[in-house]
Image 1 (tube, one colour):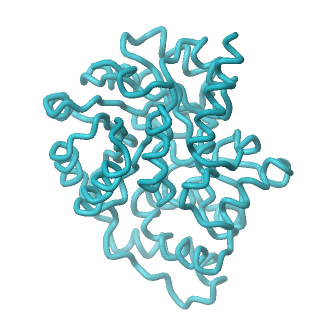
Image 2 (cartoon, helix red, strand yellow):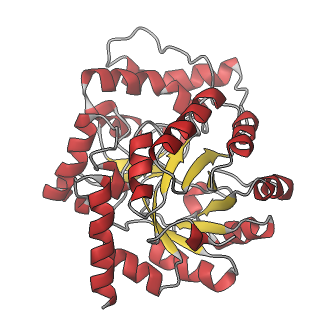
Length: 351
């Protein structure tokens, strides 16, 4: 399997869970010669299959499907009571007398994995964990190119050892959730520029660069450092096809006009896993206790009702505004126009 058979241009649209990556966005990116990504981690198996079919109706080109590697947790009543109490300064501010408990903590990864095997997308990537040798072999038997997400050299070597075809080397500047799965998340602090050459020097499989890559000149630099391609999330969050809340999109675009008032930082308060986003009142309110909140996906499920209420009212102070450190350079346009712009810039930088 060859990574470069998946795209004409070495650009992968990052798989951003939570609704941003509509079938229209995924297809528009793939139709433009890059590789569109469908994040399926939050979908039931039926919805996952339906979304894959919707993408296929819009493009005949390869696209990627991403899943979180995770087990369904079983928190104790005491652990839940403590977590709800930690969130009280937030939900009480919303005028609630209690925090609604979710019906489920996460989707069944094993069931989602079977949908992957059945639907056979050209490519699948995985975050938050690592597959077994047997699982990778099943994907290969189905003709699926396998990509692991890593934040350290040790994780990169682990993915290569189980048979992955490539890895995404995610620097600390990357928006959204960190993919760390070996060691403490807070210890995976390398920037993309630091991590990429280290991983390239140790691996025999292709390495995809991620973290603060916002334009074609960034892409050219990553390729010069040995990347086979780049993965870009934040740059595609402000495209016309991205289905994020309009107020969220506006905050991302405002970051370019006044970056000092719109800094990004890492937090585990929203989900129980470190993730980078625009600083807001939720992060500030939870800052003192964020080290105590339960791990993903429990905290993520517990804050779901808060984020839903914020979306309904359009209040970005209580939303998770995931964005990378390069958000100040995000440019709003159609996805196809963004790919064309990136390619032109990349070619100019190469010349």
